Image (cartoon, rainbow, N blue to C red; front, top):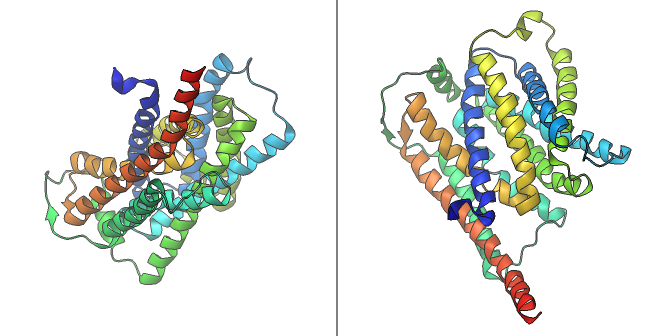
Length: 346
């Protein structure tokens, strides 16, 4: 019961969020490998999320939600376009230019990007002369080192399970990704970094929007709805072949339903709640968990091999994660002690 205490709920929530993202990575990659257009995929998942969330909005927050000023609506529209629509579309393009390993690894640079953006917007502070400040710097450097290890060092392979691929075609596409030309690889890395920058900006700016409009469920639904409209315009402009828009009873439909309901619906709401409770950098620093869960799930579900570089990189990322979380908890200790002293004196 102690693990489910009030103070530990954000930690449990980030584990759930990253597990959901791990499932998204596996299913969306399988859908892209089977030829699904990325822009159409983003439109479908955002639409599915909007349809899924609407009944909950009407039931829980429609009557209690505060009025939405035009200025706040414009901010939410911009936030949806940059943080969701552009970030997801660019990430999908980058994934076709690079390997799945590099895509998962560069995502772990998100904490660094988010922390720098949070410093720029004065959401976070960095006291380099304090122990928590040094721990934060150590965590950020370790995060980069772990991501670099995963991306560039493979080492010997450990074949844990037999090679049966439940989602199909995964192994061949992954093998082809390592033979891409260098200029294509560099382009994919740049786009991946750009996507993570938009995502980090979304995490930071959402904290300001939540203070203006605290109805998190309605805010999440509105962002999904606006993103679905934006994604539709982009998808129609790029792909007009009606055959590409059709969904069958296959991995494409499963990926759309999962990403729409679990990722854009459930995970986005949980992220808004975590940002309100712990801040954007706390959420961003949990992203290494998604890579670790994805790695284990790939070995179990897809029969993939795990190499030494993946194990070492994952271990470094775990150390980085808990280093920064420890630093943030230490920063709050003086304030908590002061509150206890004031409560005792009163």
